[in-house]
Image: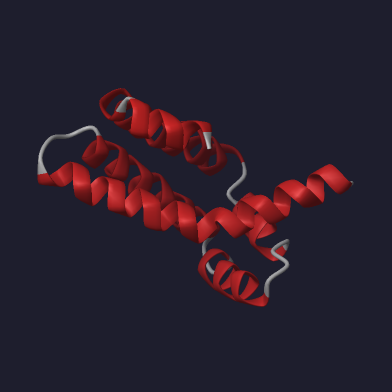
Length: 118
């Protein structure tokens, strides 16, 4: 909610923040997972409680967790670059970010609640 308010109140600085966030996630999270433990993508996917997330997540990650991580790193880096660019490319980057974040919201929420309950 705070980030949404920031986006309405100050759209340009918020866009830069979101772009940098995607860049940091790309390199920081996915880069670290690729380098240290690509299997954690599979571990994350198998903990999904909704069948559709479990099925899609495991079918994407189990065959080759390292390749999945590289695809995620690349996707988030490209999304960050688009968001931080100018003109029509910004809209494509923001659209990609919105679709991605809406798609993974249930995964993040479910795993966060599970960790809090443990």
